[in-house]
Length: 194
Image 1: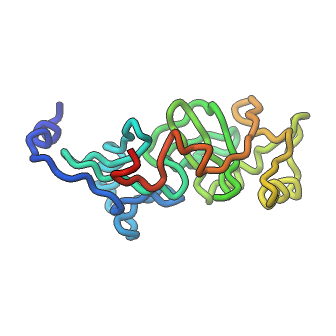
Image 2: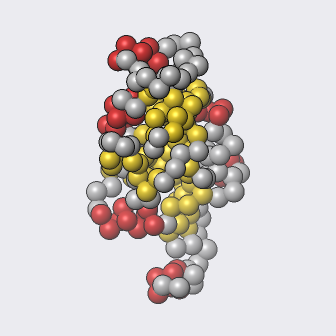
């Protein structure tokens, strides 16, 4: 156990904090809306970022849990290599495989699941994902097909839409973030959301 962890275990009991810390769609931590730029603080939050059994994500600060408001998902996933696609979370965890992928039309973003991690794609990297969409014959989706998928207000995707990832075709499902993922994570945690 590290010295700081030993010291923190002797801290008095403190109240959990709600509504102070948030994760924006680009993977930046914010306190009351103001972006955190201090690399040491960012690293400390990333290292101590966890979830409870209710799907509420928090930053463990000594004995205090600072619960995180999520704009989309608990993790933001960035593209670090284009050909082939390679992803990393905003906390620095390399994505080795993708179990499932959804397109959330409400948030206009893709949600990836790998193990117990759910993450949305950093919007600056969405074009790389769109460029790797294929149909069931393995053909890349045209730009107009990509636009149709992104702007389809009836919440329907072509049945044969896949992400070409590491030589595998991962079927993309549609999702309503509020209902699809509610059992996995809570976007706006509160004391009552347990």
